[in-house]
Length: 105
Image (cartoon, rainbow, N blue to C red; front, side):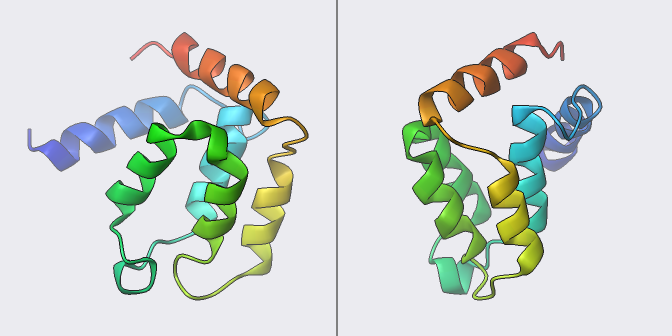
């Protein structure tokens, strides 16, 4: 199986392990509502994801940049960002990482 199929298989498994109401589900909804255009964002989608993973504490700023990463800002992108309900980044990330750790791939 090639790398893309392996990544897709794990992505499907993660999606089948969560619901849209959880922190990870809300985060992935934001990712689904947005798109990274390499010409506009000046980085690939993988680089954008790596940027978040390298500094998850910058989630709020990263998410705002993400919704602009295709040169268009849609209402559903803002709604998904607001849906994250990040009142406290640290608390959100604790719940986010705890949920991710519980997924059995």
